[in-house]
Length: 177
Image (tube, helix red, strand yellow):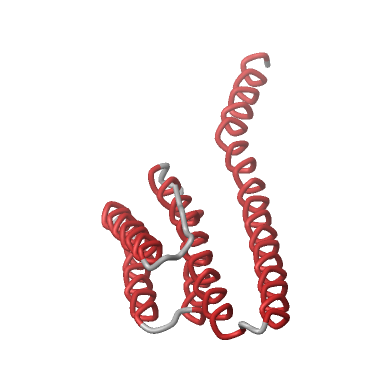
């Protein structure tokens, strides 16, 4: 009788040992996704408020053409810097082999690039399209070839960094550490 109880107890503890971490992992993933969504909403709201304030200020001063162009370029660079933060999260998740979280981050990056493309002008549109093609490659390879996906994310990181540096060279006030 004691042996049967001991075996049942061992089976129960072994099951708890393997099942409990799976249950614990599900909740933080959902919470992390909600936090990311809330932070994105907050960033959108802050950008909207800044743009509205700068537009009103430009209208008062009468320099709408120059200021509107500067505002659009700064908003574009801010969007790229935000994308760069998400790429860093993807790089970390891929190193930790959290492919599910990396996939969700890549989809967030894809949406952010679509928004950045609407803000882009001239040659920046081509740059965003190149970034999107590299992102698509990473998204397709994440399930089948993790090292290739990591390589594509690194390429995306470098392309985005060079774009931000070029923007800085044009007189933009963008400094990303």
